[in-house]
Length: 277
Image (tube, rainbow, N blue to C red; front, side, top):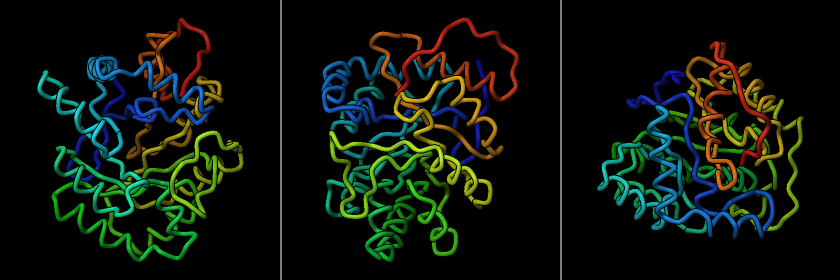
């Protein structure tokens, strides 16, 4: 299978990117599912999943800039893994610079500000501090980006920032106006109007966009979801998905196959709907 690559800054990035939320126990479903993912995703299983991704032609991983991810990627690299890391800042670290330092020290190729942090900065009128964070990322030689769950983040960025890429969430499950961190167990909202608003915005962005939360944490039918992505994916854009293959080992391969078909490649599909996260 092959759906090609896109260029993000100086980096060649597979059109499908593997995301790290399930590795870190962020199911966006229930606290019980969070714990289930943490128990399932041992270091060995995470490395196996990354190897499967590389075997499928996926060359990029999006994961948190924390010590758990740093350590497992170090082991993975020592064992011959070559997947490139796009590091996500961690909102529980009060200083954004600490996450960026972890990304640099851990060998990331790119770093982006967490969507919850950007939403919070927007709501609190604190976006001025984003400039220093982007300068720190760029100064370390990494591709720089921001994430967000609301269009206002990117509308501001278009006139105030010079970055290499945007991480655009299809949904805004739990507003971060009062705090940047995700609250486990909170009732989340996955609304069609949020998805429609974000894809309208993406069409006019000046930078490549990585589309994420496209499966609404397993709530969307995967065939419909990837068909929707394909209709709104610009030539310079990529899409990120996380997988939880405990009961469905071929989930990642099937996601790739669905995206490939939705983008116009002829390949018969021989499987039914399965949970995606």
